[in-house]
Length: 273
Ligand SMILES: Nc1ncnc2c1ncn2[C@@H]1O[C@H](COP(=O)(O)OP(=O)(O)O)[C@@H](O)[C@H]1O
Ligand SMILES: [Mg+2]
Image (cartoon, rainbow, N blue to C red; front, side):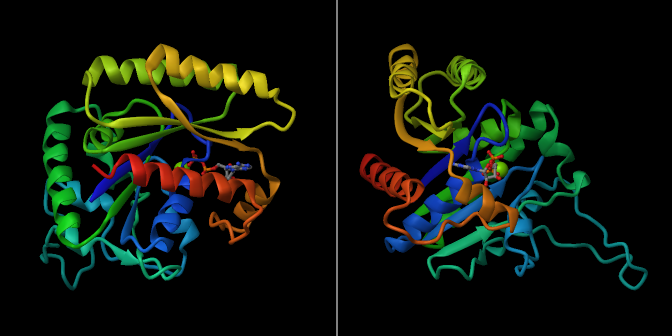
């Protein structure tokens, strides 16, 4: 099983859109795929897959204390903490795609959203354990959609990943922020085996190609990070989202899907060994 994480310096760059469409891309190629909403600050799966009601969510894996239910009838009942295999639910959009939701209620993310290092050391152990359990369940790809910026929960997900897609909107701010993010990551984690890639998303139509090439060179030369996707602003995608739909319908001409397919093939190729 290979683990791919989507990350960014800022929110709104298109991580979730790209994460889900890549997950479907792998599923359509016949790979059993599990997409995890690990954006605890702003969970998205619950507002996209409104018909699905998972019993457990990603946060539940990290509950350090057993929770008591509130209703009078079972005041003393103790909820058993779930094991990783209890979390995935069928996506119902493709038989090879399963999902894990995040819980948006802040009390479930208190530990995960904190900067408590001891908590996160334990959380990292649980994450490694979950990863090996997901592998046992037969998943070929694990796609983790994180929350932006350098926070300990996202860093833990990055630590367990084989590859990361760092998504940014190309403008001065996006370039500077992403450069900072990568430098910090490398100084914190050192040189690791993970493969990192840049995806330029929402490139404003009219941006000179020369500029995009310059930005690509910047990341390659300064940080050794390759670009795997350059995707323009596409109002169809934004319009879809108006109706809570992040899945881009099959269309061979669609630049976004062409880019997604290229990324899926590249990741599959680079992560083979
Ligand atoms: N290439 C694109 N062109 C136009 N809109 C996009 C594109 N990619 C993403 N979006 C839109 O940008 C918004 C933020 O995307 P989202 O995937 O939720 O970002 P993030 O997960 O990084 O916060 C959504 O409304 C989405 O539809
Ligand atoms: Mg998101």
